[in-house]
Each structure stands twice: as C-alpha cells, then as structure tokens.
Amino acid sequence: MIETSRLTLYPLTYDQLVKYQRNDLSLEAELQLLPTPRTVSEALREALEQTILPNVAANANDYLFHTLWTAIRKADRQLVGDLCIVGIPNAAGEIEIGYGTYPAFCKQGLMTEMVGGILQWAASQPAVKAVVASTDKDNTASFAVLRKNQFKQVNETATLFHWRRAVKG
Image (cartoon, rainbow, N blue to C red; front, side, top):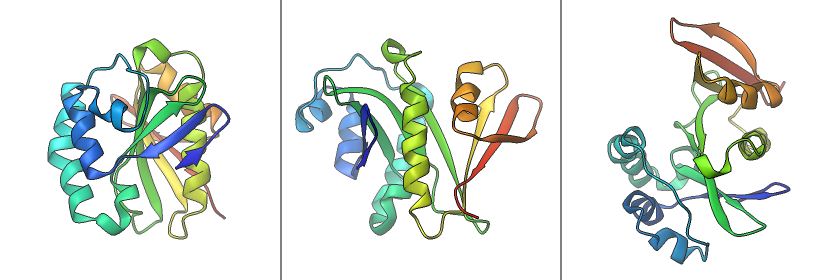
C-alpha cells in the first residue's frame, strides 16, 4: 500500500481483481469500504480479461507491476479511482501508467495525488528509472495531472501526447 495525504493506494490481488470486475460490491465488502458508484468500462473489462488478470496470475512475485491499484479516500473509505502499471520496467527502466478517476470524484485533485504516490513508490523500486504515460490530445484533465507531477511531453502522434518523468538520475 501507498499512503498519501488523502488516499490509500491499494494494489489488488488476483481474487480482488475478479471482484472489482464483477462490480457487485464484493470488493468493497472485503476491503470494508462504502459502496462506490462506478462502472467498469468495456476497455477496462477487456484489459482485465486479456492482460491484467493473466499477467497477475503469471507474475505472482512482481504482481505490483501488473495489477490495478485502486485509490481509497481515507476520509470516508470510498474508492475514487484506479491506476494500472503496464508491466515490469523495460530495458530503459521505464514503467507505463494508465489511470482514471470515477466521475463523482473528478476535479478534486485526487488523481494528481494518486499519480504522485505512484511516483514515490516507483522511485523506491531499484529497476525503475522513469514513468511514462500517454494521453488523448483532447483529454486536458489527464495531461494536467501529468504536468502537475512534473511529467514532460516527449513526443506525439496524430491523437496522443506521450509523457515521461524521471524518478532517478
């Protein structure tokens, strides 16, 4: 777990990922959380089924680099958003992140705080030298989160901005 001022970032185990995907409040019950209005998008459901769950199952020793980290707001013990690390560090020591805030919790700085917490954790991991992310060019809220965490835009495609933040040397 990672603690920030307002959040606890909790990496989900395989069984908890299954409960998260079912979205039947069983995860909230297990973690003793208030029910949270959330949906599992088709894109996230597909990522869970095709990538996240198989990778967590196959990489039990380093599952933290493959699982969904959920953000729990400390004040009321509610899920407010998620962040995923997309695998172990590459040859350059980079890990990629993707993230999202549930609609009821947008525009409160929670995702900025969550990304900041993951950056601190990443800096403590020996093999991690940098964190990268991509944002849709029209997702101003997402790249605001990255800018507030000192990410620099490193390149772009027709539809995406690509960002990088060094966490070591």
